[in-house]
Length: 372
Image 1 (cartoon, one colour):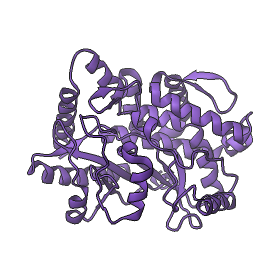
Image 2 (image 1 turned 90 degrees about the horizontal axis):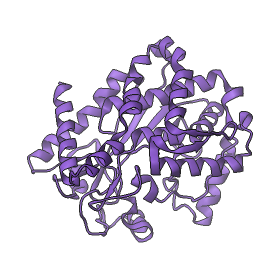
Image 3 (image 1 turned 90 degrees about the vertical axis):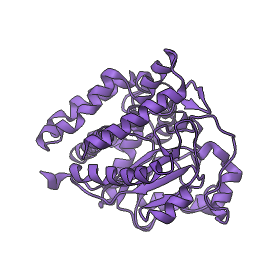
Image 4 (image 1 turned 45 degrees about the vertical axis):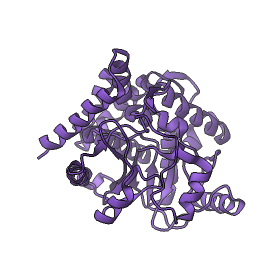
């Protein structure tokens, strides 16, 4: 049954710092660790895992670089900060990781510290282009659900925001309006038009909730990249979110006529674009408690209930593929709340952001030790 699985790979962005401040050293980390790359703001660093089908292998691929980095950081009295925004008090000033990089300079001049966030990008391998774009259409329609499960950024600059994913609120979606792509050629033409017009600086300058990915974009594509998720410190939860995504895509392939929004939505694709962007925004504000609009028929539904319905729809397939156990952390999130909801409750009980992060960092360290 494992042969039915899709290849999965992850791009994991992290914040580095102390227990009460962000410290930018990604340029140094990149020089020392070959599997890490710097981000434009030096407080961010990223590692990328090799594509694997097996979830146990993916667990180790996600864990090992993090543990190695942590060991190095601890020798410098530094750590990994699990928030997806700059939660501690800081100057609203961009910290270059590479002052000679023209693209980084463009980002700083146009977006500033709004791009200083951390996240996890989940990649699913899909070689069939028609299936790939059908999957991108469906997952875009349901991207708000994955954001809600992962939300981990209610704080910014040592203050409580009004959002569960401040990261998604502040991150500059580019281009501002992204259509639903009818086909690969439709996507190629759109990319070329936006680069030629200056809306995008290059092929990497496409910052949306989801996009096609591959070895030579836009022409050679082999995977779906879900970009909307906040940073998820709990690897078991991250893999549960990934399993939900994978099951949904496999289920789509078996039910294209009823699940491809191009065919089965009551809305036009232009209307869907607006609805999906609104849903993403509502999920960023209230996550599991958000009232969303269903892409299929327009009914209003609480995000938590939509996820429950999705789990029910996928339960038979999950059991058939021996993946049902992977979804257990999602049921726990639905019952107990996501990371942001828990942090907000702690803050309102009187804990400081430093205290909350200290406990979360210690929980991360403990979970890494238990995985030995």
